[in-house]
Length: 361
Image 1 (cartoon, helix red, strand yellow):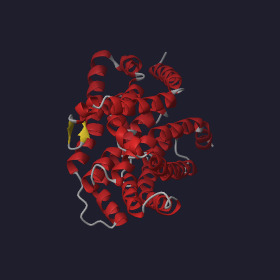
Image 2 (cartoon, helix red, strand yellow):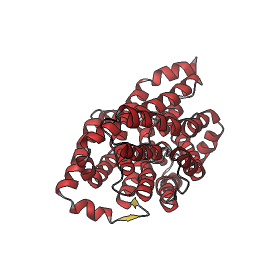
Image 3 (tube, one colour):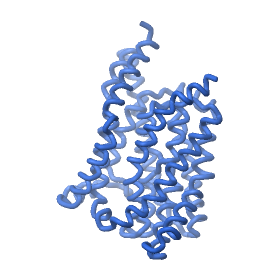
Image 4 (spheres, helix red, strand yellow):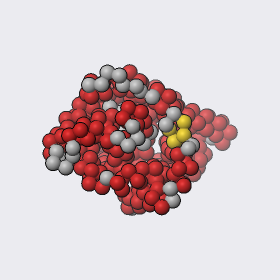
């Protein structure tokens, strides 16, 4: 059997394992969210202890778990495939235009419509303005870390996903502040650069370096066949387990805020959910029209649909305070993102054949 056949067989086995484990993933996600809230409510010492383990407003325990989620995907990346990805600009164009020329502005319009118009009888205008600010912070921060999980669950191209994320990281450095300033009319926005740079380092640079070093050393000593068919297979399930543990920790931190604002949580969630599906539809539909390969189209659409919530939460707290409406919206962003993104992962997987037939045609 050739190396290609071995690799294909391993990929099929991994896909079956992921599919079986993923079957009830939404239920487990909801259970972990509830468990996290309960821990925060009845065992407050646990999140208080973990919350002290942070640097530049980045939780180090959460960073470790996210790193574990990303590392297995980085193992599949080699630098030759990264160079190859840069030679296919259509996928990068879809991601970049959707994330930076469309998403921040549709988030503002959708959030303004619901929070300032539709829900005006239930939300004080001043508080609605704070909620709108939090939504804008989410809209101007496309996903950096969790998109690797969504790409993994939808069999995305790991090298191309990495390039897409890297391009977004570079754009965030120069575009996040002026876009937020434009939409909110705030000229003295202070971006926590330590948070931004640390997040990029922890969630992109470090796992990529670890994956590349692991690949080089193991292939050198054990061979490519062992690396692809044995070593990588050892990490089956690690990504999903890391996701579930991350949710428990995140919601143990935010449980009190969620329980204190049950009605507003629902009202805030509406525009965030609408925006997520809307942006995904734009990017995924554009990719379909351009006949992009499915492993590029899926992750490309999900980068914009999900958010860099670590950055959004940190900026909301630094600008408006921990108990502000803006901070609450960024927390709700985490609450709704995972279940909604899992539904988009399922849709992406179900429509794979439509993409493949169109590309083949």
